[in-house]
Amino acid sequence: MTRILAIAALLLGAVPSAALANEGGGGLISLDKSIVIQMINFGLLLFILIKLLYKPLLAKMEERTQAIRKSLEEAQAARAEAERERSEHAAKLQAAYAEAQAIRATALKEAGEEQRRLLEAARAEATRLVESARSELAQDVRRARQDLRQEVADLATTVAERLIRKSLRDEDHRRIIEDAIGRVDRVS
Amino acid sequence: MRSHEGTARRYAKALFELARDAGEPEAVGRELEQVAAVYAGDARTHEVLTRPWIKPEDRRAVAAAIAQKAGARKLVQDFLGLVADRGRADHLPEIIGAYRLLVDAELGRARAQVRTAVAFTDGEKQHLATRLERALGKRIILEEQVDATLLGGFIAQVGSLILDGSLDGQLARMRQRLARG
Image 1 (cartoon, chains in turn cyan, purple):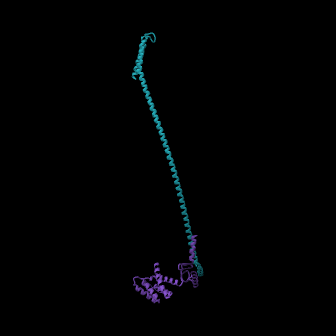
Image 2: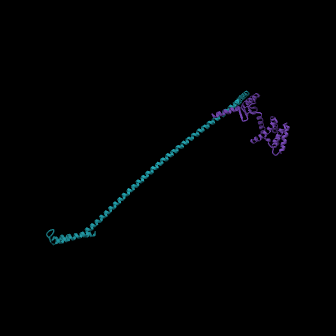
């Protein structure tokens, strides 16, 4: 950069000196030997400009172009990589989502089956309990009826026995014995 | 008691065969019952005849002497002496029962044990015996026992056959019917 500034300062110094040199002539460009010098000067200036300014500038520009291209390529690569990773992540996410959906579906199915099984077991248990309770109830009722019948029978026969014992006279005994003897024939 | 019955049957059968050969099975039976009643009525005699530590020959002598004194014939004296000698005096009730059965079977008759609430009249006894004889085809000897616990009527047993003509039986059957519903 300092070299470029030096060349620019030299040029700025040469232009006024050429203009001053021409001030002694009559027109802007004198077709004399100074033109040769001016041409040499111009050629020299051109050469110097090309050598010191233009080529480094081109090189620099090329370098910057390359750098920009490289950066661009790197950016594109990074973008591609990012895109690939994004796609990969999206695919993974999709797979995970699908897996999660499958797990959820399986879990729902298993939960449904478990619920159905539990429900059936609960229904069976409830039916069994109802049947058992019904059977026990029927048995209790049967037992209670039997007990009641037995009590009624005991009470009735006890009362009958007391009444009979109190009211039996000798002629009753005789009649009962005769009746019983009369039934002996049935044995044969 | 069950082992008594088997032993008693063997003794009764032996006595019965001898008595039958002598042609006096009933008389032997009566005498046997009379002497056995004497044994049972005297506690000391019963003790002498049933105690195992008393010599067999002493038991035999005591039993035979009592039988002789009671007027039993020789066969009965010897039999009771043998029973006492063998230490079977406590089997006498069963022996008498088994002997009765053998005599009854020989004479074609059966005994009817009748439990009754009130005593039978002679007519009732005759009537029942006739009915039982007609039903069973055997001559019947009634053995009546008044049982005050019976409400009314009677229960007769002939061998394994039981005839329940009691009010108690009727009440029991009524109770069963009521209980069955």
